[in-house]
Image (cartoon, rainbow, N blue to C red; front, side, top):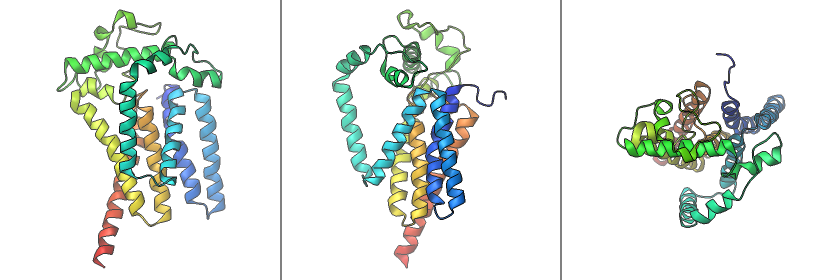
Length: 282
């Protein structure tokens, strides 16, 4: 396939997963100076590449990964995190009208300027990319409501969303043909294509990654193993955050890395659980 990454946003998503891994491996190999420096070099190259993609969702994913990293540094527990996220969700629901008004006041559109590109992330009044994303989200929700049990079928969003568009939500880049893009959400996309079950599976997967990364990290007494768990979980959380704005799990480049890291988290949980049982019997 040429080009290898058909879109700069897919490239950004993959780099977003690679950055925490490269940094984690640099620390993992800290006793091997040459190997550690090589991974630090990879980290720098990936960061430069991430910047040059001008993918705002990818930039947000790095912030999310960094936030998740500090949760472990501060030794925040899983229950505390879930409680905090619950409070945040309640706050957003209560103040959604005020928050939307503030977002509508932002008139900065995406550009090649880094600061303007960052400021445009919350522009839902004039930025065409953001407005089209809202259009796709609305269609996905409408499709999910139309067929809430089984959805329209995996991979069919782009062929069915056009009739669900509202004329008032059309943008300069909207299309009525099944040839451009997807639902721009790893959560609403499955809702449209697989119904309530698809949405619930993605949410359960997210919560599962958080739970088992916390569990295996705190159960492990091996510093090197903890570094791997932390690096992989930060990468996954970065992608799950990216998934609120884009969906690339239908792309082999992103999917292979994502599911491989899911397997690593599962493997580490099994290993730490078995060691805990062995220690309790000895």
